[in-house]
Amino acid sequence: MKKLLLGLLAGLMPLIAFATNPQVELKTSQGTVVIELFPEAAPASVDNFLQYVKSGFYDGLIFHRVINGFMIQGGGFDPQMNQKATRAPVKNEAKQAIEKGVRNAPGSIAMARTNDPHSATAQFFINLVDNRMLDYPSRDGYGYTAFGKVVKGMEVVNNIANVRTGNAGMHQDVPMTPVVIQTARVLEAKQ
Image (cartoon, rainbow, N blue to C red; front, top):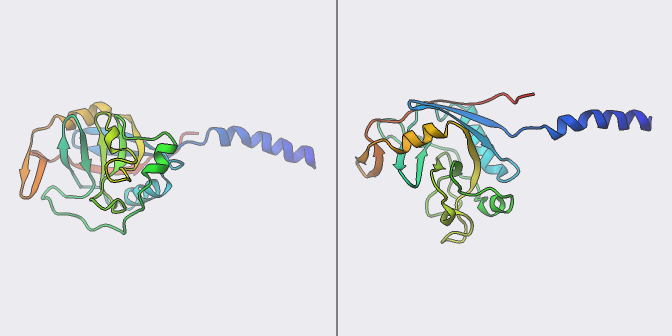
């Protein structure tokens, strides 16, 4: 019996060793971006993001804040700049993410928030450069939770960073031609 159990465990080890992190595909009006998420570094943030993706929340929303040399932000507004209602915020996990080696580096995705460190809901941003000043502890003792990275389509992210921006009402750095997230979906894990 002991040999049978050991044999079964040995057979499962390759499956465990090759478990992959979830990936999300964002099809945008500028092209497709694939993001790998890191649940070990920021479990609540990843779960929150995946819930929004699976519900279709991001479909039709825009990247509403684009600052070349800094980041692109989306996940909150439609092309008419109407803000979409969200679920309750998640707790800031920037300290845990840093401890696991996930930070606001070029190509990383992070939770956007207000001045309240625990206010992140659906909005996210993709870092264009090394934004170490956003890492825990940042200026406010919390920082911004990075929870994944772009693994395909960084050229699309950089193209979005180069669109012409202006003001839209009270909002600054808004693309003059909307950059729409046409669909967001979880990719099937590769075997």
